[in-house]
Length: 155
Image 1: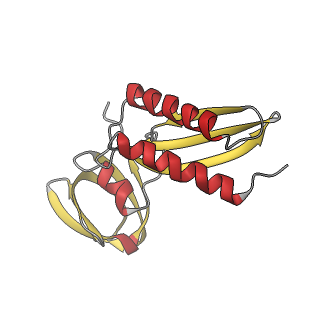
Image 2: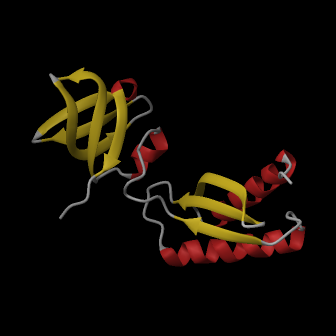
């Protein structure tokens, strides 16, 4: 039995509201059947990044209560609330905004300064570009030139 789109949209709307109550936002929502029960998997973070496990747990409890009260799902379910991992690709304006001030790696669609790979501290994020401090050189890179970005782990 497949979930009706209207049920999925109702759950998404409620999860977005709950995230906003905690000054966070819903990045991704997946609702699917596994082992005869629904899995409601949410990826949530603050706009500037850095959501904590405790906030994720609070949001999880609110989502469970909401599903119980609203009878959105007609069978058993599990709710998972996670923060974006370090290995999550940076592809959108909001993804890059969350990593502002941190070290990132960029793979480019076309060479920029004769390089297809750059890394450095993300200094600023504008609507159509970002400013990267790469080896004491400040670079302005258009989003259209970025194939993929990832946050780097400092060791």
